[in-house]
Structure formats: structure tokens, C-alpha cells
Length: 342
Image (cartoon, one colour):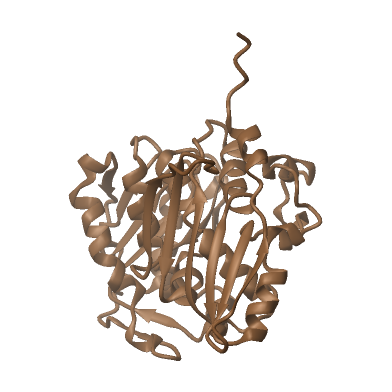
């Protein structure tokens, strides 16, 4: 049954914000401008809208930017720009800014909802994807939402899946049921990592990665009041592991984040502990690290998942602390073609 409310619940003013309601105009734009954005949409028999932003459809950078803004629950600005300074990290960069960093990044954008189906359930290949975006806050299946003290109750919802095929009906049904939505009130957007749109929306997680690391470090999330960042946009790779490696490397070795926090103590701790260079696994391309651990994410040092470089400003004193460094050389070695033999 569909919910009739568009309210949300949570502390510190979050009760007035619905990430699904705020993202709804962005979803409408994605559908209304599908042809120009090079995406396609279909409806299931029950009425759920499935958006293809890179599976069979071509997608593109602009579609990826819009999907990234949807992922952030309408509470973040995302833009792609040309990098023309004298010594650029990479020619094209993704910029992100949010004045609601905890809610937009962790309450919406974070890919934390595990969705799977067996071969028997799909009638073919097994399915697995991590769901991100506003609908997570309707289902609240993750312990993180209890910590955030937030739940959305909007009448419609949207979920983003980073996977190379459209979800099977059993997964669609589960999402609608867990979100308390009628099938026709649910939209699911699919953006494979190896697509252009998928690459954009993953790299646009540069601030979210910093917020997640802040949470892992045990620093009070209420400290963080503003967040902005940038990361290089790599060319997509046709191989799934390579594509995942490139998007991770963009953040781990090229991501730069500026956070504003309430106190000096939090600013100092984050500048020191947040950068990816604190990890024992730092220094190798992510695809190589992932392969060396037999494709098991949980064997990788959690400290690795962080931006390369951070600045953290304190409202208490007005001072800013800096930590980490960008490794442009590693990125160029991974993304550039072979040297011209001539």
C-alpha cells in the first residue's frame, strides 16, 4: 500500500526535509528529457518505472550528473568542469557541494542497501546490487538510519542501482514492499560503473566517502555542517573490475574534500585521520588491491576508503587543518594510453 504522507522524521531540523520529495523534480526531469540525456525508461506490468542510464542506453555525463543529484536526495550540487590549470590532475573534474552533508551523503547517497536474488528467483542469473539514493530512507533497512535518527515517509520513492542489468521482478517487488510504496510510486535507476553516467555518479561520491570515513572513525557526525569536494573523472573501462578500480582510484588518489565542522578538536582529528594515505593498503591501484584479496571487499583495510586530500575548517576558531596528498602520477599511469613509440 502506498504511503500518503510526504513528511520525514529526525533531529536537528531533518524532520522538515524529505529526500524523496526533494529528488522528485530531478526524477521527472530525467524522464521528461530522456531522449536528450540518452537514457530510456520502461514500466513493469505493475507500473514501476525502470530507468536505463547505461545498460542498453548510451547515457552520458549530463545524465550522470542528474543521477548523482538524485542520489543525494536533492540536497547536493554536482557539476562537471574542464580542468585547465597549468598542472591539472586530469582534464575533467567532478565537483560536489552540500549544506546537508550527513543527510545527503549518508541518509541518501551512500550505497548501503544490499539487494540480491538467486538464480531460482530470477529464472536465470543471480542478481546482486547495493541500493543507493532516497528510497533507502523509506525502507530504513540499515542500522545507520537508527544512528542518524532519520526516516522519510514520502508517498513516492527512487532508488539507484549500480549494476549492469535491470533488476529482476523479485527485487523490484521487495523494494516496493520494504519502502511501503505501491509499485507505480517507485522509480529505479540503473547505472553500470562501466558506463559514462555510472562513472560520473560514482566519482560524485567523493564527499560521501569522507562522511562515511568520519562515521567509521567514530567522530560525531553532528560536527559536520558543510561539505564540498572534487575528483577527476576517468574514462570508463569496458571491464567491470577495471571500471570499479578507476572510480575508486579517482577518489582515493585524486579526491579533494573540504569539510566545515563545529570544533577544533574534530577538525584536527579529521585532518590527521581522514585521508586514504592512512591505510596500510594505500599506494596501489584499487583494482590490483581488490584482486589481491580475491575480490573480497571486507579484506581491504576500511581506512583506504577515503579522499586523498582533506581540508577541515573549524567554526570554533576559524582555523583550517590540512592532511593527505593527491597522487596524480598513479592516476595517469592507470588511465593514460601507452607512450608513443615514435
